Length: 127
Image (cartoon, rainbow, N blue to C red; front, side, top):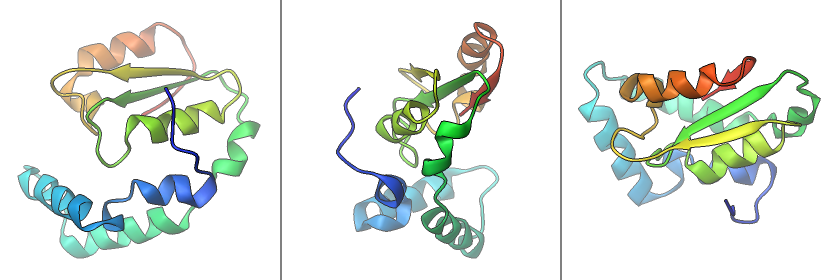
């Protein structure tokens, strides 16, 4: 999987829902469709924390076996972002769940697929 040439905070902030009008519209429609919606102020705080926290430089220090799983339809954390995170962890495996329900909540929408991937290799799972 090829990712756009980005590093550090650019990589993370590029996918944040507050980074563009179209993405904000998509983000708010996703929030409104949630059966347990997050209040707008709480979401704004989460977005700001997301934009200002950057641990990409520390990924190389992770020594545990790691499996990164992402949904191909994940808007807040698209596959190229998750691939960049997994790629920064030595020896990490990266998997994409495809098709219906492959959104940001793969563990909830596709639990059997998610669990099957996690069962294939013990260790740390990032989703």
